[in-house]
Length: 342
Image (cartoon, rainbow, N blue to C red; front, top):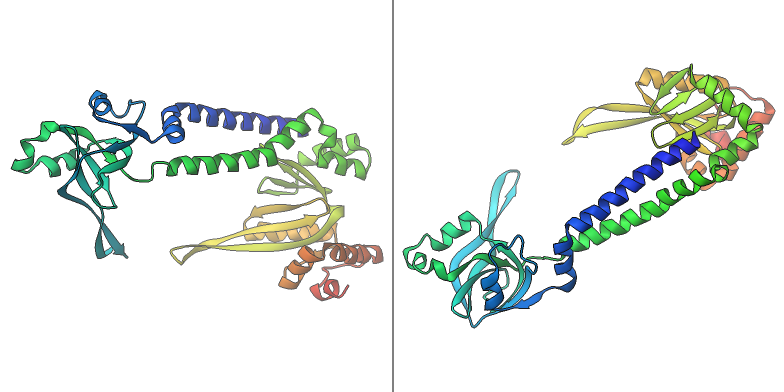
């Protein structure tokens, strides 16, 4: 089962990495402009561009003789609660004189004689605003059918680099271990844990038999007489009731726009080697905790902030107190006070 789970993980990571490589290859034009741009261009190059969506160099730097104010502005409307509160000019459109042609530049920093940004196809609404006036319509043929947007051209690239770094970290954290465990299953922590319990083959057969008729199940976990078994597409885990340390009910409140929409419940069973989270309706979660109390009466049941702090910060003391309780053969839930004072 471990080998199968690792094989699925390796396959999934392979598909993710292939998808990332294919995406990067599809964006080769942007990558080239991101790395090598902005390209300094003049009228000859601008005249040769008929379609900016296929132009090899579209992150450009253009210098003109002067910039003319077109009177067209981009206005940002600020709203609060759906009601307009204010307006501000976020950018203006200028006509940059390049030789005997005019290049529209969208700029937030005033009238530039040198424009740096992305060549973008001129949308219909901008064209109507620019050339809808009689005086400008007569010289429309002098304008290029695209404009320079001086926005943050490289921002998507920086975001992609950040995403690639995160993906690389996740691959190092999860993908490489899956590859390693696929080729050496004996090094998997679960295999080592099961080996410490006794005969691994016998335990595997016993767990498989019990998994066919679990007492409870939820959240990808099966609760059997002896074991807590997690069996999902990408995860497989095995814990024992005999190793149970702490169990409690977790209630999560859900809301939309501060309006309560309901609650979800889960039985959290913390054992040596890991923790199981059996989700379901409250009645089902209560039944799981009651069953766990029968199987491991020495464990701590119930939640408190003191228990949570002790379990996280003084785990060894917590475990020693539970082990002492198990040796003494005590029954019932162990109160937080007794554990905290241990």
